[in-house]
Image (cartoon, rainbow, N blue to C red):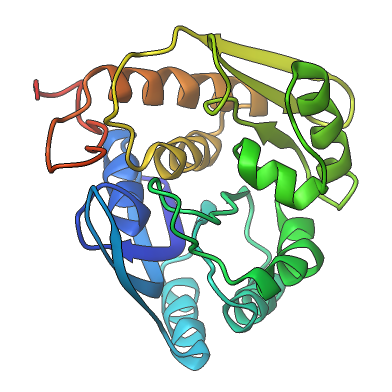
Length: 262
């Protein structure tokens, strides 16, 4: 069985973060492991509080996984501080894992910041160059590329700029635009366009975490880049279509829609 590690924040409500990643790994038939970098007290409506894990404990968790089990892919999610980014980057350089997928989580679904503003420069300099794939949504891509995105052409330009920061490939997720859900994949050679019908639901908590974790799972199992991204797109689209009306706000996607109904 292939092994995939998520390095991210914990969402106690179960819809996003580490919890969404582990569910996605299981749904794809890979063995999931986790390194928690922040504990987030949140639910479907709001973020109540965030407590970061000490950098030395982040390092020890990573060492525990790599020195014994090893990994076939790594997904990076919420890294709220420069300190967390620095220690994670150091360990990735030490262990040189394959298939590093980075979801540059900056905001919760309700708009609450999950990354300190001063950490964005650290993200660009130390984390992005280590990625095989990076998956920003439009607000995140605007922050990283330092430009507004209002059209497909501007999505393409943002992808070029982010790729130029040292990424292996960039996927700009178009879920924040109107019309069909269009994502753009750029690998430095050309663009691929992944489109799906938009699903009329508010229950999209954790979609970004789920998408990036699905990509990591598929890369770990040996799929090529485009095949992995398209398969992840199909998976998260169906997870949204079968989303769960849990909680008072934005409910979670249904990670196990293939196996049992909601």
